[in-house]
Image (cartoon, rainbow, N blue to C red; front, side):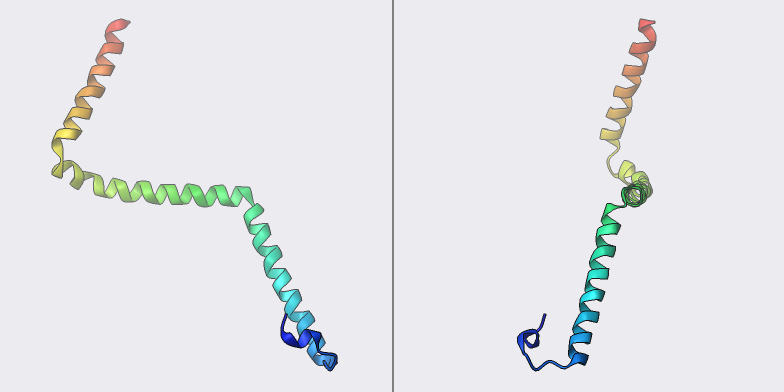
Length: 90
């Protein structure tokens, strides 16, 4: 509150204005708390963020493979070895 809140010479209009300002501030606070408490909405937002990140990485993946083919080939060979090893055990 302002310094005028302790002044005994406040007019009813000033008091009413302070009350309205406090109500508005409390309304914003309650809305913010409700927003944070909405777990389902928070989860949906997080899913959207992850989808966007995955999409961005997928767009850049082909150029990364062209720039670094050796690590990609090594990972592919490793995965192929694991798959062949599991098939041969059956």
